[in-house]
Length: 342
Image (cartoon, rainbow, N blue to C red):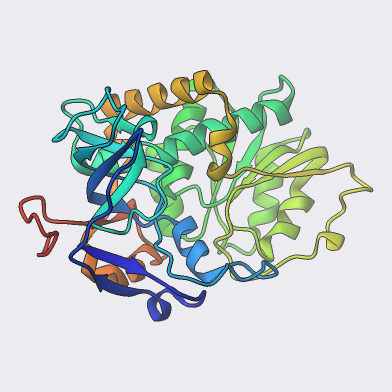
């Protein structure tokens, strides 16, 4: 069994190592053992390895990245009646998916619908569930209005999901991307949504022009860092900055933001708090995610696949600015030991 792990926080390519162990974990009551076949490289996975400025170091001990993925049930614990060995499942939250095997509570292993590919199934939960959380936060902040809403990193996997949902819900959305090429690509995919490249010197003026007299009501931001001050300045008085990521390496002091004078609100959204929703709400969210995977799999696109042992190359690819889609780590389905190229 192969496992990617780290014992201290730091640059992912330097602190992550591959360990091999002949032993496999054993599921307990209400749990299943899943042989992982595909798992994504999410920005949040790397943040967990490297930490964020100002956050305390994680406790010592070996840890394995990953919270999502797709695999096959190999063994079930006692009291498990809903799943069987050989069944394909998507798992979340399942800490440690960057391993060939992981034990998961049975109620967090979602059967993969027929016709959904392994790769799509590996992306079926985190990003669609994050979309749902962002939309709930956005609706609360808009208080019945229709925008405009400004989103950063619009070309990212979640950014494209937000754009697609905005078309369905008739939401006024303004997209920010890093490059001119990225802006052209977004304009072709979503011609009704203004897209601005932040490499343009006048990108802030462009955003104000598209926002109109009412100004930007809500910002969805996964970049953070020094850009937060620019985003706060673009908000209308009483507006809300919703932060759900930290792709930037810089920082912004909250004292530098005009929170009090302009009555701005800053709130965070994290997929790691999805479990705080009621069982009924979580079931509705999962049903939405399954429907999206079945009917619009193109919204869950893949940038590239790498064998689990090639995690360093996968991380490098995941960080490329021009990347489109999500990078996946794979395990060969036919090798019982989990060894071999994808």
